[in-house]
Image (cartoon, rainbow, N blue to C red; front, top):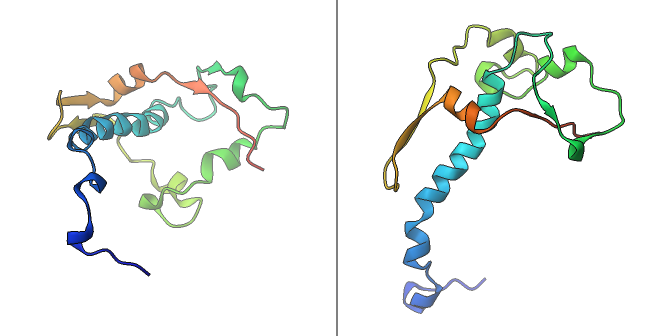
Amino acid sequence: MLIKRAQEIRSSEITDPRTYMHRRSFMAGAAAVLLAPSAARAAAPPPGQALQATPSAAFRIEDAPTKFESATTYNNFYEFGVDKADPSQNAGSFRTRPWTMRVEGFVARPKTYDIDELIRLFPLEERVYRLR
């Protein structure tokens, strides 16, 4: 295996400083996109009520829906337990409000986002995926 020594690396192979300096704005945008599903979950109605979401024609299938009990209890949130059903049993007292996220540091526009603001920015959309 060829391992280059530091003196063998040309400056043209190193990341351009303009690209490197804009990484924070990319990370802030990526964080907002990644938090959108959390925000949508936090705004979910009580169990058993229909979601107020606009169906998306691009994500429609003909299969029968998964049983409600399976869809609402089977998950991977290990913060609440390691068994697939633990989070649905242990997360009942988890408070999602007030909940804020700060984007700060080397960014053009530092800002604090409230969960309700994120929900308004990214409205809920119904998507049905075939994962079988």
